[in-house]
Image 1 (cartoon, rainbow, N blue to C red):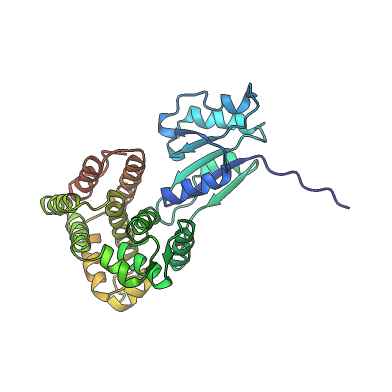
Image 2: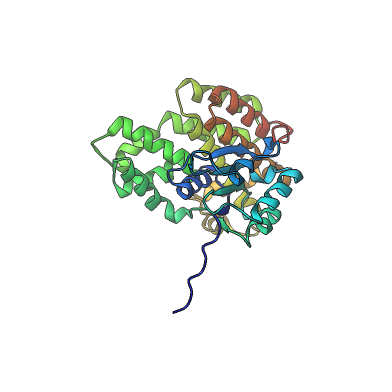
Length: 320
């Protein structure tokens, strides 16, 4: 009988494009534990001390480091010392948000790979409807498969925004079968028109027009995370189109980028021409900042105008 392999220490690097999915994966790892959360940008030193020191009352501990790409050099060195002899009962989880098609941060992956796990966290577009149905079931929402597909078509691919939409449906239609028609009635119409208008104006760098559209959305009660999710979806479409050869026909480009309509290619090509690749990467960082801010309790009317002004204005590097 061969000896069983010793389990890896509970040190994890979770990386991917979506902050919501990363946090969900982190809390699945810690289970019932309530981790101490630290933003890497606010690292002060000594954060691993609680993990390395036995608890007076014997309770298990965990440390969750968000925004891990922002760790200062001193923080990386401290973590390096800790993972040389980590507490096997104290999970340490690092969350790193990366841009589209980017890889895991090399320094963090090197730190973790020999002592723990390095895991990409993502959901492919084709997997989103099934993911939505699982989330709906957990919330005891009777969501039809065509309703799940309609949510993606209407709201885009941002998991956090889709999660918030499910919460709205639970409140409005609990106990009912939620079909495509109900989703369309709940999320389409004036609000959707204004979200499209906001994205068009922001990525056309029409700052006054984008701010007017945003004000209309906020005054009508549209949820901030849903607006941010739509902006994120537009950013991803623009990035995909920009990466494609200009010689592709609109039909071929639409298929390659996963767009529903050929006319979107023409519009997104024009919008993409207004931004360098570096600016688009900076916008992604601004959106990641906004997502953290909204989920930490910042208000829509403070965060979203900053995001829109950073996209539609001349500079996008002020908030990151």
